[in-house]
Length: 214
Length: 294
Image (cartoon, rainbow over all chains, first blue to last red; front, side):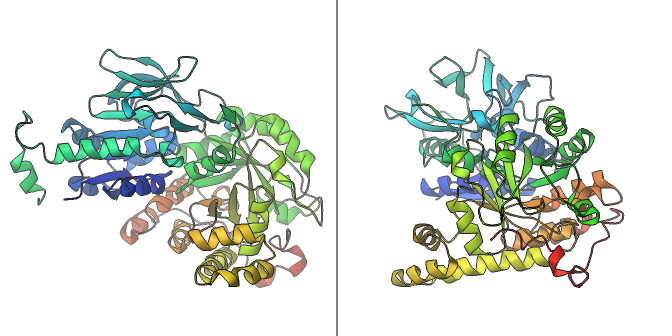
């Protein structure tokens, strides 16, 4: 069965994530309202404007349902603005939106659009081939908590990709560069969440499945 | 290995703005209202198009001090307008560090033959178009984002609809062509063959395409989104309405939920009067802005 993965489609480059998920064999579902989250096993929060997404998440009551999805163990993947949305602390004291990552992010950390850039990045978790990373008015991670794994750094040491359990985030845009390894990882995690299988050490949540019509 | 201001970053910023509303603002206070309402970017200018239309005379790039004031007031991207062909205004805007330049027909053109060579800049450009040929010529000159022009400052969506339909219909026509027919299509569109072929293959413009010029209600925004726009520019429609903050917010919601009529009905309630608007017949041909640029 195809794994259904939500893509938050309030604003931003959600179509690119939809295409990337399709490319790795998952079934993307655009999410604009809480009810649409009931039948997905993962969620991607795209790049866009975090101030806009923050308001739309609050306005349409998406905060708690997304937190619940994350608490169930489903993978949540944020890129750029999506990373800001997932951070527990934001430099300058803005309220966090979905504080799922124990990190501090700085918005527009490289400057304005003229400082946007592309580079090759080593991400050991994804294997030996470097990731072609596009940074657009990108945020940076200033601090990571003890439970956060750093997945990638820029040559100067600044942190640009992290993972904390089932939550992943990147400062850059794999979806703009034809890079699908992050999406494949998310799809694998989502499939595992949907069907932990025998011997996984986790009891399948049968009641939950049935409720959701599976 | 690390490269700034590449085609991917220029075009990529526009991709991040998709599904969003870019609002014209004339003061830092307006810019904050726009940001609070959920705008994805603001366009900093001295007068909104309806005031430019009313006052006549030559409309130029805004005062850099005023643009800087707006850049300091918000954290979202700030765009600013240069006159068509006025590459020095564009150089000045680039030096200020604006995030996008709009080579705009709303200002009085500085060159009646040539547009700005946008490849020569590190800052990305958005340009207006009325049809596919115009869009592809601008993209060939280096525009990293397009918008149909509509008819700015009218509060009348009719031209925006007409132009968007034209652009998309022409793309569909290219898709149905044999490869050997694309050479003639390129000639007819007065656009480079390579870009024409790319559009025929992809079934879309190679850059993000917004709609501008005449959006003044949530329903207008949803209309162009359903027709295939990737986002909207709202100029006079917000700050010439009775309650700008509410109208701005409602247009943002409508651009997200453009397919959901129940939500559109809900957010359209009690917004106060939209901007007054002008019928196209009331605008003499020489005062039409969309015909500027070629």
